Image (cartoon, rainbow, N blue to C red):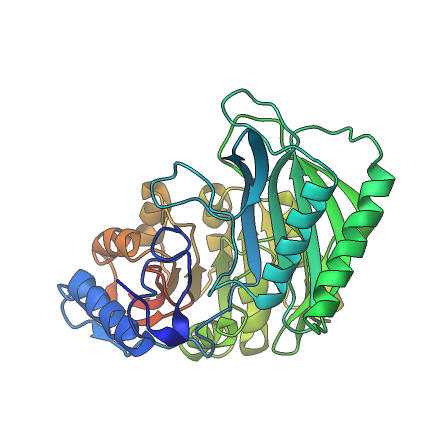
Length: 393
C-alpha cells in the first residue's frame, strides 16, 4: 500500500485522514465511477454521467480540524497535534499532510510550537482535565484570509493577552518562513466543556481581529465563520453548483432545503424567478440574509426552521423545483413523504453520501423518475463522494 512518489506521505496508511493515497488519482476516479454505477445501476433508465474530477488533487482542504493529544517520551509527556490513527487509539503528531491546504498545515505547526512553548496542557478525554481540545482552521481561497479557532476545555485562561500575542507572533514567523501570502485575520477561542465528540461548543470569544473570512463563489461574496457550513474544496464548488444550475428551468420558483448560509440559493438566483431557502441553524440564516443583502440579490428569501415543517409551508408558494442538500444521514422519511405527495415537477438532490442517496432514491422513485446522476469528486484520496441527481415527476 505504498503511495506513488508524487503523493506519498510519511503518515500513510496509519493516519485516518485519507484511505486511497496508495492509488493514482485517475485510478481513484475510475473506482469511484464504478462504485456509483454498482450502487445505483439498478434504477431503470438512469443515466450515470462521468465523474467530475477535482481541479486540484492535493492540498485542497480549506478547513482543518485537528485534536490535541500527548505522547510519552521517557518520563515526559509531550503535547501532540494531528489526526487520529485508523484504530482511533492515539493522535498522530502531524509532520505533513497531502490533503490540507499548505498554509493551514503551516499554521497548525505554529500552533503546536506555541502550545509547547507556553506549556499549555492538552485535553484528556478520560478524566476531563487539560486546556486545549482542538484547532479549527479555515482559509478563504479568494482572499487568502485565515481564521484560527482554538477550542478549549475552560473559559478562563490566565495571561491570555500574552499568549495571544505569542500565538500571533509564531504564526507570522512560520508563514513568513514559507513565503506565504496568506494572512490570519482572526483568532477565536471556542469553549467546549461537554464530554462529546462534537468539536465546537456554543461560546466563542475573539482574541484578535474578526470572526470571519471573506470568500467568493464566482462573483458572489460570503463571510465564513468557524462553524459555517461551506464546501471544504473551493476548487470544485462552482463545478458542483453549475450542475444544479444547468438542470434548473429558467424563471422557476425554487425551494432550497438545508440551504446553510445560502450558497446554492444565491448561486441559482440569477436563473430563477424566486428562491426560498430553508435552514434550521439561526446563525446560518443570519449569514444567508446578510449575504443576499451584500450581493444585492432581492429574489431570495430565507426561512428558519426544521426542513420538515418549513418545507410544507414553502410548498404553498407552488414551487417548480426543490433542491435538497441534506447532511450525510440523507432525507428523513417524513420529508420524503411531503415530496412524494407534492406537485413538484423536479427534485435536484445534492448528496454527500451515496449510500443514503440510494436509500432515498428507492423511496422517491415511487412518484419520480430517476433521470440522471453526476458524481463529483470533492475529496481526492478519500472514499467520500458527492453527486448531483435529477428526479422528474
